[in-house]
Image (cartoon, rainbow, N blue to C red; front, side, top):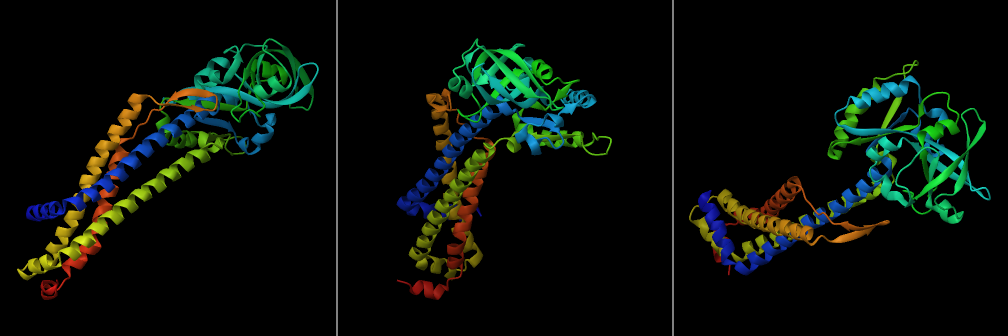
Length: 412
């Protein structure tokens, strides 16, 4: 095998221009894929972080059936009484959880005493909420970054459309679970940007104010927002927690809770999937580049070395050895291209991070590009290139190994 490697390397060096051109194409393909994965991965991670850390959280727990009717914000499907204490005990016992926060969500009418408009409200416990969604404060574009009882954060749409400023008084009118209507006066403490864009109608208030406004006769919670210590363990932990919650049954023997990760709650997950699809097609392009480049080189090598192949066969070299020789040439091209591509690609990613390039996402400006790629991705791309190099060499190698020595020696 060692001698075959030497022969394969010697043959590649005999055609330096072609070898350099092919290796360069493979290298450029690897560099492009590594850079694309690093940059697109950085944008994807930033986007997910903005969504989960400013509103949704990493996962949420609701009463069974709540999410199916979430558009109407049904307060009759809240988690109540002992189910709240039981759930908090379960969540507090999980070492993977960094924090969790209770919420009450409901629809209401917002009035500035001259005009009235609809609003969607999320009532929170400020201390636990700011721990569970740490970027919530960045959505407050005007006013206080805190929230006290008797205060409300109103959406930008209402502030602009109804000319309501920070410090103004407003009234929230809501329908209670029993169908009666109640109102409460609040101070506008801030203006908040909606996660659904400028047209959103989502406001925030203190959870104790919501219980008073809705005249709840006991503890009630619409959802619990959960933040993990390690977001990378989301899939594994969600399966574990789902199994634990499935054991909690009501009097009818049906599950009390349902768990949803951020992917199932946010439409932005489709954008993340699009980024993954784009990355997949870029990898397909890399495979095509390697396949075509090496197959072209090997086919040319076979046609240019027909008499040489005939001579090797005539002196008793087995067809299998000839096949191995050409496959090793393709392998060498793939390995060299992959290694150089990895080195150059990682170098470019390192330079991008040193340059600290910035971009904007929504209202957030000056976000620093943090390109990174995992060793697993580098190994996967390198292995793909090497395997495709071998596959691309097989057809020309088979052709060379099956040549008749006499016919090959007659070739001009």
